Length: 118
Image 1 (cartoon, rainbow, N blue to C red):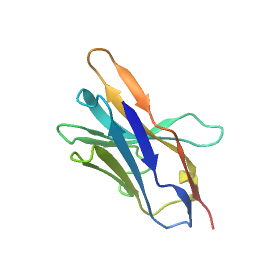
Image 2: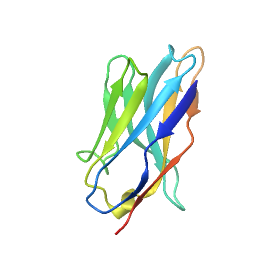
Image 3: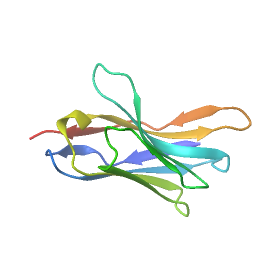
Image 4: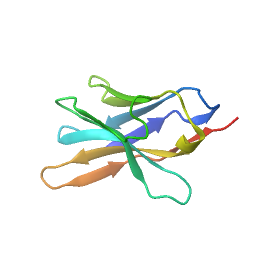
């Protein structure tokens, strides 16, 4: 599985941005796709995820109500809409795809930097 992320850049506080992650390869056994982020000096944390079949979503408390994850199954792409951005949202954002069978495994895309600053 290969993950190609796009989006990111510099945005002012209160602004919006959309990240995209296109999956390719053996994606038929991917159970969830989502986004993690890692700020300088901090551990990588889950931002949002979505199951590939049921569409169930999960959000970090810090972004719930501001960020929205969605998917386009035809394009095998997951999107993260970031609204109401705050300086503390500044981080490298990583796309993730998780497989459960035949064995648990996480696939990662290259990170994309989101900087929220005036």
